[in-house]
Image (cartoon, rainbow, N blue to C red):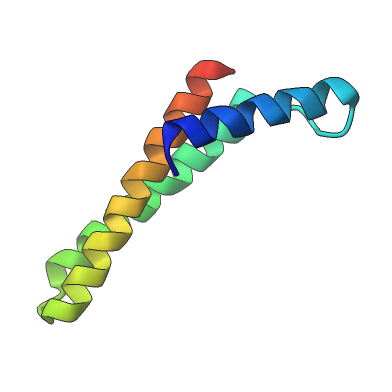
Amino acid sequence: MSMKDISAKLEEYQKRLKQGKAKKVEPKHVQKIIDKLTRKEADLIDELAATTKPGKRERLEKKLETLHSSRETATWLMEKL
């Protein structure tokens, strides 16, 4: 998901929040997700180090890329809150 898409979703969220249709996202909620992603990253790195099969290594590397993207998005959201 691109930053443009994320920005659009954030704007939609803010509209719903003003209308009372959404609960407020607190910085502690985002921090909880960032912490979870960090733990998951450490687990994936450990698993990647222990893996020798090329196919499995490739899948783990893709998971790490997705995780980095998610953490970048969460960090961006934290700055916006």
